[in-house]
Length: 185
Picture 1 (cartoon, one colour):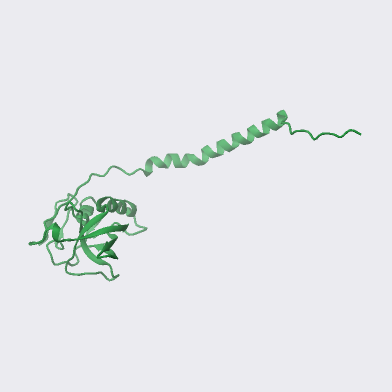
Picture 2: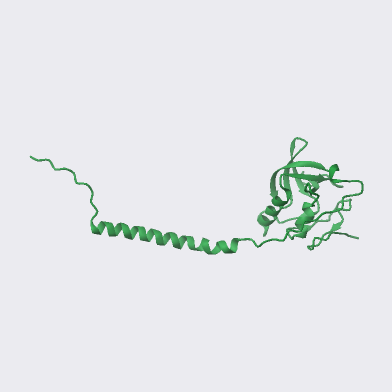
């Protein structure tokens, strides 16, 4: 008796049409699923923000060279960073500005702008109160070029001026969105 050889699978016309239908449906579902993301991506782009870097006059007898330099490890939000200061990791809360907290509107924008301002290194200036209720060091934060990070965030609308305390002239500044700081009376 002769043995039958197994047949190689063949695609009949009906089988090919079935596969074509499946692939077509898969393509249509993929396009329909991606459509909301394509539409929303236009809205998700942030408008161009005009940079308003603010340079403040330091307290009498103080220069940028007198400020402590720190390496930025992480930007946590719009007004808090982790830095390496004197060889140890230190959490720094900005004196003079209050930005949106996680979960608030514009949190991501304030955090991103803070990150773009601070870069890799900052200069820190202490004031009357050394730390807040959460153990974070309170400091005025400057770039190496002398731009006040906290005042710039306020001037550009990413935060509000915070004037609860602070004895130096920086602590009594009333900042406006125009970027023009003035001493409050």
